[in-house]
Length: 255
Image (cartoon, rainbow, N blue to C red):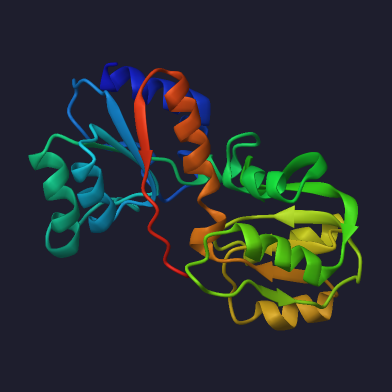
């Protein structure tokens, strides 16, 4: 399949253009020629030297990641940036990035994957950012105890051996769950206003401890990497349906 066709189909599925004005990431094709043929696609959370090297080892023509290389552009392509880009160019491997579009996708996105894991029902978009959303909210089919929800996530996520942390400051029974993966504690007040019993996210800022305690809401910190593997895995399944060979590169950070 032509690279341009793969990119167009990914952009359409992920609504890449709709996030252009609200995402610092340069979503879409970040590295690649105008014309190329794609047979094998590698998927990873992070576009870093290790995943680039492993994509080359897998003989991939395209690497699709959640965290890319360009966040507002480059001042210089030197040092670490050069070390990441050079192998892609030298070996004719393209790089496609989907950051917030892959967080907010209500079927294939990261928050949707966490909601699937928790078997949430009656789902709706959550986590407003401009005109778009970066998360999802839903209801537990059976109420979770806070520790039970924490354990459910800990048992299923690739946390790199690190613990899933619980700030148990909310109700003893959790029914209403708000999810923003990665670094999502900025949406704590939105979760409180919506009546959520818990905010599930990846990593926390120091002030979230007191904010959650004062607001009376539970917070689960399940790891930035761990909560953001769902989107690239879901897109991998989609790309396989297009007839392309795929591989997933697991590189957990424990963070």
